[in-house]
Image (cartoon, rainbow, N blue to C red; front, side):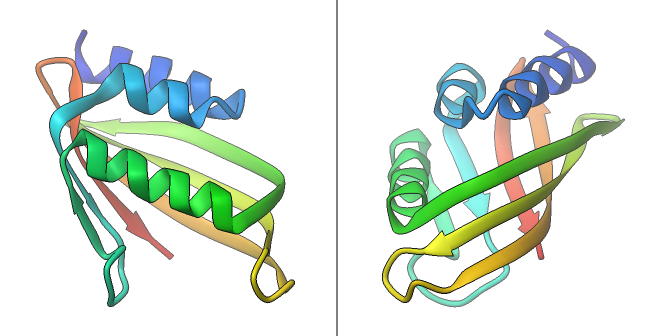
Length: 117
């Protein structure tokens, strides 16, 4: 699959709130996930570490709604924009979040995901 095809299929799954399925199908074994923050979740390397990060996030938040917009493709990369309404389970704080995910594709798999918020 080329970048456009990966972007279309990956984003279609996310728009159906099938995040884990999208990651399982499209994340490369050596994927790197980067967040703009300090701490242990700032960088995850490898498919298992990225899955563990996603499991933690979904376990720590109640997702009331989630929307994905895009994809927007440029060369071997594509981006998606997300709007989310979530409650942090530990604090009970409800918040609306907006973020952008930038994904790099190699050989039909996502090798890097980088988030901006």
